[in-house]
Image 1: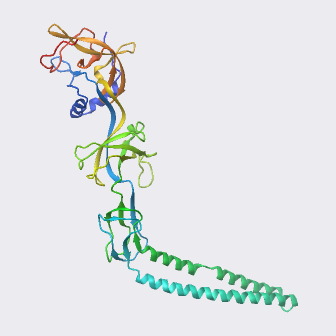
Image 2: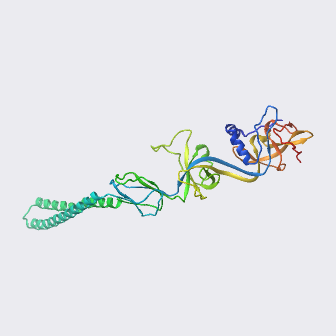
Image 3: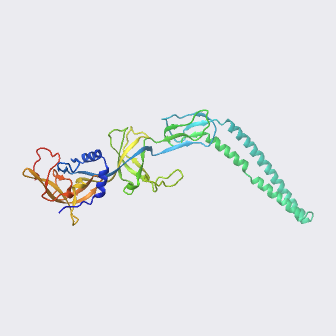
Length: 391
């Protein structure tokens, strides 16, 4: 009886991955593999050894600061002086630049004068209107003026009251004074100046400085639609950068966007490359890490230690749903396929966990299990010389 394999999705994935990636993954699990189905009928095999099996997805990202602020001003006056340079460490409230506000100061002086004059005139007008109204009421009661005359006097009072309550001059003065305060550009947070876009003599516009915390970093990445359901906040992440060489840095998934990346118009991008913006915290510190560096990451979806794992095509499924693997057993000068019942567990893109009472370190588990039966002769591809009979 021949067996069937139900691991079609994973085998399709394997078929799409380049040979270099397969060899690298196999080396990580201390396994020896080849390409099944050689012309001489020999088979590939896995030297069984307990190891750590990890299911992960690989992504790339960019190093960013956990705390970053763009410093800008809405006051469009020339820059008079700059107090901070690229790389300077600053504290919140430190002066970064000062704008040339000579013209603004003169406007404020004129606005103060105008405000004072306008408020004084409005107060006099209101006082006169109140007196006129009181006299008008008395005259109306004596019958000296008509009701229409009294209503006109009352209307004048209302106008005077409205003029007195008009704070437009005071509002304009407050606006100018606010601009004067804003002309002194201060650091909103403590950190390192990572960009200076201010130039003495040039009108201030846009972002003038960027201040970032270069000690507390994170990685910005994007998770594909196919993988996003498997990624959870808090999952462990391993990180590498060119700047830190072979050192493996640890991190954790910090956040996953609730919606896919949107276009500049605020619409969800509809394509085969839909991604969900994700941030990863860096729990390990390294002085070589710099903001803007590219990072290569593995997000650990699941991990098991001290388990046996084999390629998917080393596992066959019987008609009753049970699963088996075949070990190459010495019989005279040849090898035959010995059937071992197993249960499967954790699956990755390349390997599947197997467990069973007949498994032990050193067994040669044959690939292409769905075309084998117990007792079939097998030829091991590139078998090491001196292979001993398995006991």
